[in-house]
Image: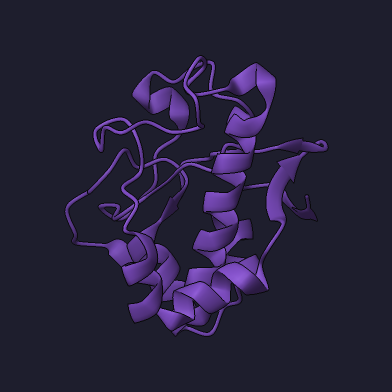
Length: 155
């Protein structure tokens, strides 16, 4: 669903933009903002992925420059694959100094009920975003559900 892809494009862009700020550099001292280890960095599938996923590419272009913000600051928009029926707050995982912690409220994620949690559980779940898109919700509505009180802003 295009709206699901748009939501993830905005969340991923927000996550990346957060780490582009000097105060939050994820890989300080590296020659680029990344890491070659899949254990420490999102897996990049490259041009071939783009060629076989035109809806994803359209979503990225349609949402270019959009990020999630709270009080004018970019939110590190955590996301993950699947919940077990509810998302987790950062505090539940011991992430007590997570920036904009108030945005990441634990909430029901009924679109994933009965599934095994895959990932940390904080922020937007892949199965929940897909379920909401299937019900006709827009990317903005999906993001507002998972990131409480965050705004979508042109960066």
